[in-house]
Amino acid sequence: MSTTEYTVTGMTCGHCEMSVREEVSEVPGVQDVQVSHETGRLTVDGSDDVNQDAVIAAVEEAGYSAVRA
Amino acid sequence: MSTTEYTVTGMTCGHCEMSVREEVSEVPGVQDVQVSHETGRLTVDGSDDVNQDAVIAAVEEAGYSAVRA
Image 1 (spheres, rainbow over the protein chains, first blue to last red):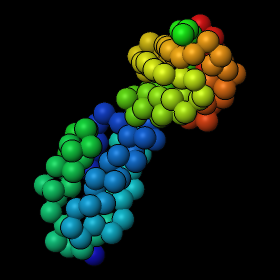
Image 2: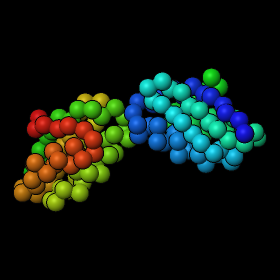
Image 3: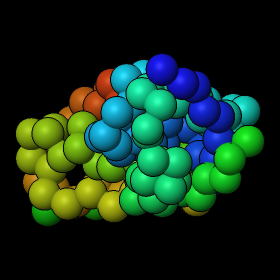
């Protein structure tokens, strides 16, 4: 089990958070996703082998940008 | 056929526009909805008997506020 944090840019509202949450939740091994458009912070809980590049790609799929915090 | 314009406050992104469009499209008589989060302008095309209070209520249902422009 591990927790990884990312900084997401471009989210403006709760709908944006929902889009990010939906995409990141589909990454294999992810068990919990917390995201705030106000802080830009994305926190991903999951198995130790969650692919961080896949998380970043999922955020981009939702229409935003992410980097490891 | 008539066109009515409203000013909507609170939309911040394309997801917000989509929420407004979905709710307003369900108002009886409405045939086309155009909405911009950048200008806050909502344009509703439909039959002459579209209930303007119902349009405003639909915007509120989506989580925003509207007044006749």
